Image 1 (cartoon, rainbow, N blue to C red):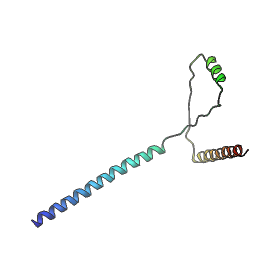
Image 2 (tube, rainbow, N blue to C red):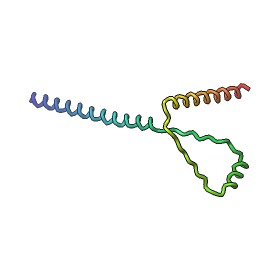
Image 3 (cartoon, one colour):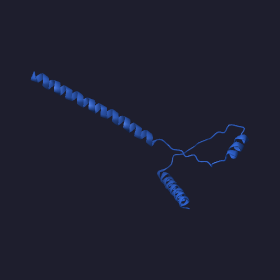
Image 4 (cartoon, one colour):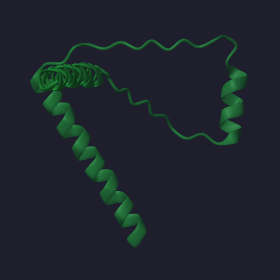
Length: 105
């Protein structure tokens, strides 16, 4: 009887360990896949001048054909990425300063 209880306990312990290890492996696989996928997503910023209703109507009326937008890109070097990041940070800082000066004025 005692031997049966020990075998049942050992079997339960082995199965529990295997189940826990499998769950951790699956979780790690999905987490790693999501992190890698999010690192490969490129972002695009599209900006345009705000138009009045009259300008929008005039623009739409002047267009007789469907417009096509061509987006192209090239792979940047590490130095180019760093330069772009610094430029973006500088532009955001300038915009924040302008917004702050408007609120004060």
